[in-house]
Image (cartoon, rainbow, N blue to C red; front, side, top):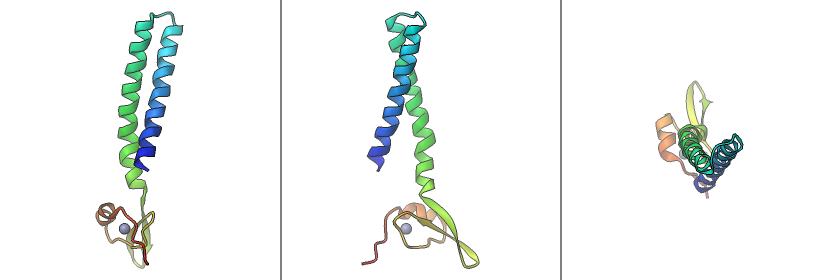
Length: 98
Ligand SMILES: [Zn+2]
């Protein structure tokens, strides 16, 4: 899952980098300028994606649900209703019954 996500982010960053480099070259700049622009766009995009997607992906796996009068936190692959978000975050693995 994590490897797949990283590969996806890398792919998006490559596409953005190539697009930025291509547009730079089409605008009449030299090839060196295009490579620099593409590289910069790639790096910035990858950092931005890691920042935006990274923490959010972890949090989105946990959702709050009503457990009687209180709130419980559940996440994918786990049947336990955690009392706090912190507990659910520290769990992060399936509690397979049987
Ligand atoms: Zn759990």
